[in-house]
Image (tube, rainbow, N blue to C red; front, top):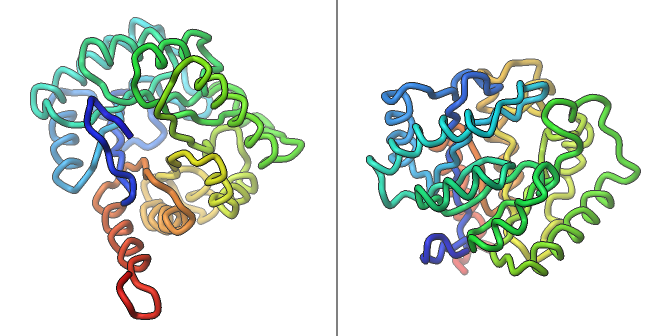
Length: 280
């Protein structure tokens, strides 16, 4: 994957650390608003082995409040100034569904990746914009919007519906000249608990597209609701699900807890290097 003119090798899974510059993200421990909080969080994630930082200023938790384009931009500018001052060479992704916001982040702050939860559904200008910018694009599946996505989500065929969605969207992006496309099945976005675990069980099937696969399960309801805990108590469950994702071909883990994800990758990578006790 080409990021700011450098090739990012995905033969070993990568870790995308989450930087939320919002007051209302679902996991309270991830909310960073002051300059000190942001600086400390970024420093910690990079020291623990994050390969990239995903900055977001619009909470996409179920039922989250909508904010204006200007407010999202203002939050992102404040966060990106700190990141760029402290770590000018860090690979940064922006979590946004708005084309104007993505454009600002790429052109003003050298953001390398656009991570769009809506797959271009919430802004018709997103696909042409990322194609023109020439940056990698994370194409996620979501049914509905953050405000209504968990209100009785339904599929005629979960896997069939999502596969058709990706096939259509990938073709649209390629027709516009977009190059690096990453797929994200969208765990927790318009899916019931059963939907999420059906996706997990069939995650390797997404390799049919021949595209990198990003998974974001960190501290989500598919973990804490199943275990009867809370987002704050969901680290162990998250690591278990991330490990399954790695075994099924996940290329990028989007996480709140970098060190644990890095350790899971090291373990799975070592396992895959050996067959019957012989190093490949």
